[in-house]
Image 1 (tube, helix red, strand yellow):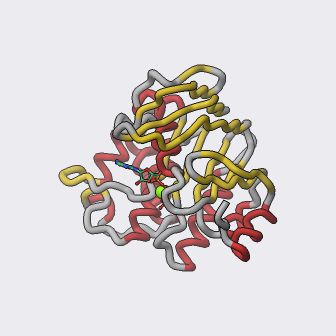
Image 2 (image 1 turned 60 degrees about the vertical axis):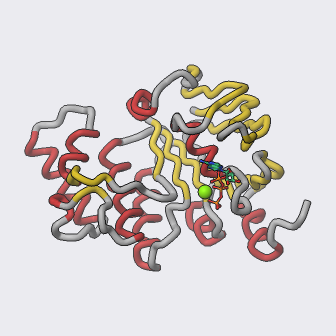
Image 3 (image 1 turned 135 degrees about the vertical axis):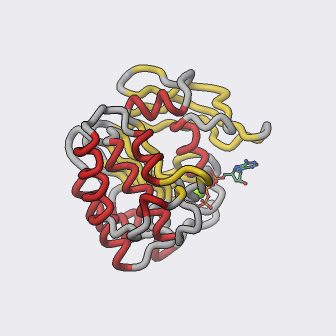
Length: 236
Ligand SMILES: Nc1ncnc2c1ncn2[C@@H]1O[C@H](COP(=O)(O)OP(=O)(O)OP(=O)(O)O)[C@@H](O)[C@H]1O
Ligand SMILES: [Mg+2]
């Protein structure tokens, strides 16, 4: 599904990812953990094609085709989705306008509204959700649930969740984890960035990677996340 081959990534001439490699097959769940500033969000930005980060070496393949020259929307249309660590506010655009705009599969209007209403209920979005501007004056947890709402409307194949758990209360966390699990199948791949072994235990990933200073320094299974929780990342 996704292959990162020896990539270097720079932001403002500073090297953030250094000779980074990662391969995610169809039907796999990968977790990346790592200290603040390790480069985890930069990794999600470069996969999604954020123009603020530059890929200076290596290649990114999605379904065996290089996407490094593709724009963000081209990547999204291919089936890559990123739930932001800090979801942006889109003032002047209502959630209804936004959801209608991002769905590229043409649905009859009635079915579209039905789908939106259904997901809105499942994700416990506020009653006036559709009329409100995207993420504007949303609580932290509402913003995160809105990311999942968008994910479910877009139907992506590769899902990157950058700290989807942060800011969620216990019930919302349970709900979001359930929805991710429900969405996951053998045709889908998930990359989750998190600081918490609770998330790891719940989602039972195939691999847990530790990222430090722009590189993956260790790969293991769920027990690696437990080790990190107990002993931290250490100094080396
Ligand atoms: N726009 C930017 N300008 C300058 N430096 C940046 C920019 N974005 C990120 N960085 C730097 O890149 C490094 C990696 O940041 P990144 O956000 O990828 O870390 P992270 O692993 O996601 O951390 P956290 O766990 O805190 O979310 C940091 O040192 C950060 O200061
Ligand atoms: Mg981050």
